[in-house]
Image (tube, rainbow, N blue to C red):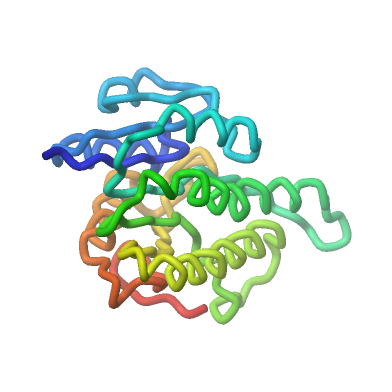
Length: 221
């Protein structure tokens, strides 16, 4: 039986690279995004577009379209980055990052719980910048806070979902060459996707709730 993975923000960047990776590995890929791309359509078994993961009505539509669908893996990948400068902080931008980086993954998990059975896995694509202990450069107030919140949500999900046999991981892809960072990263999306997939494959109920770099490094909270 073919395993199915659902990936949010799957139309480009790390999300698209993950879609390609799982397609090539023989999985059925469901790509969720606001606007579909030709590249995603090439590898996805199904594309559900027009989904803004910050909108309750869109999440409700997503859940309705997936009624009866079994997911082996849910990847919360959609995200946003703004760079705030102290003294000129845009609090609306911080709120927007909290909505998409933290609240949206929690919304998606709650809405899609009926699709996740025993043995399923959830991968929250977070960031090393969500580590409080690792912050030695400051700035990025909204991004750091939203990813730290996502890490906290993910840890609680791991605890609450353990009795259902569902494992959860918080995964940092690395500094990836994507539009989010003006393609100034250190690794390409394909390398990041391969590392993330290795971490997901290794995830068990015993290790559920952890925070890892895609290269296997355990990250500090």
